[in-house]
Image (cartoon, rainbow over all chains, first blue to last red):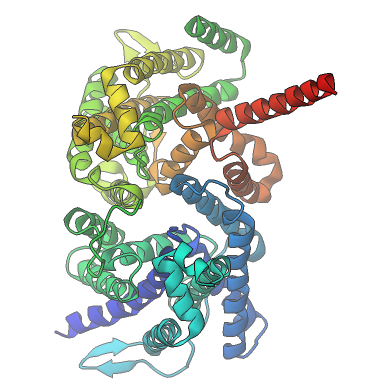
Length: 291
Length: 318
């Protein structure tokens, strides 16, 4: 029981990170029907920015957080402005290769800026680990879960209660109809890029204290977030959260009770399973033939 | 005629290049061409994306590597085993996966590729784990050993030529027409009586067999393999080769493999900036020539000729 609880805690912690990354994917997919392979690189940029601003420049944590998120959002906007919008015939394969090219580029930039070594960051708070029924819970896990919940609540508020959020949802449902009704759909696409980059950066900042941060950390995190998004149903926010947490917990239990060499495979086995059995994901609308 | 020119070029290049490093590089270009030829059949003609093609390449390479090192099989016996195993895997994976379309198909193949990669990396007892397998014997046919170098270069490029002819035949056949129909509209193709899933799985298996063959040749050329050569980035690199060369063009596949294999070599002079430049080139080509280089350059030529002609006719009228 104690062991199970321990795995559950670490699973939920990782799962929350996957959920946040998956949210970034989903947000962008519903607004643009684009899968961004550079999403993992936004996570990496967020984590490494925090390393520089917080550990390097000793800025207060909230300010370092804000600057990192803002910086990565600008990277997201640049990606949309310079690369995605310039494509005349947006064929999915072309867009996939462009975002992969962007991820290689960002990884190269990060390698030059932060070097090839890994960096580490101290935990957000110096509170000693909690002891719950014999299992340890790191304070950072609480930070991760708390911030994830806050992000989800803020997004929910944004989509349901603000005019911009509703306009963005309208764009996601039917871009042309939305633009006829006066929604600046181009600007909504840009905003979606900025927001998904920001959410990715937040995931990176949250995970920074519990992992080694290096220029190459983004690839696997991005792919896992992507599995989580597919698991829940790409395009659905609740699906992204459920998929992320489910993936995190199953991964952690698999590592604990079967074998640690399985860790990375679990995400992809789940991905194949869900694609074969229910391609629209747990929360998906049931439509598979997207184009 | 084109085939004869192709043969002469291969022969001439083989004779002209003496540097063993360059010969090996050109041999690897040949191996990559085999991979792109297969993937081009799947992506360019049938319109089915695969983001996990390196898996088949890996299965082919690892099967022969394991059989010839652990079990001491002669390479010539390992070849059919590698091809057969890959074909069976492609068949089993292909049926459920190819029912998916668009991004979902991309995801499915990506997941499959990652699983194979993780398997190669983690199943240390058999695959040697992350450090890979060493001491793969060179190819030997009878008492005659084909050592890496000029002979191997010729062997690989002759195989390329063979696959080339197979591709041309398939494209012009009933199956090829069915594939192109599926590319344009799967529903319309099905309505015309084409067994679409069967056609898609056949071309999937064909491209997997090409990849297995490439893997076999690669393993015996390099004599050392590790999972890193068959990871997600390799799959992406293969897709990029096909797209950059120009989809649905057999010559485009050759061009794409050539450019993307040699590009990192040319970029070595930029040292740490290499990765950045590679990424930028990839994005730039895709933004400005989404049809690939073969088609893109032809388009530019057509457009400029058109402009020139209309300017001339305007001048003659005025």
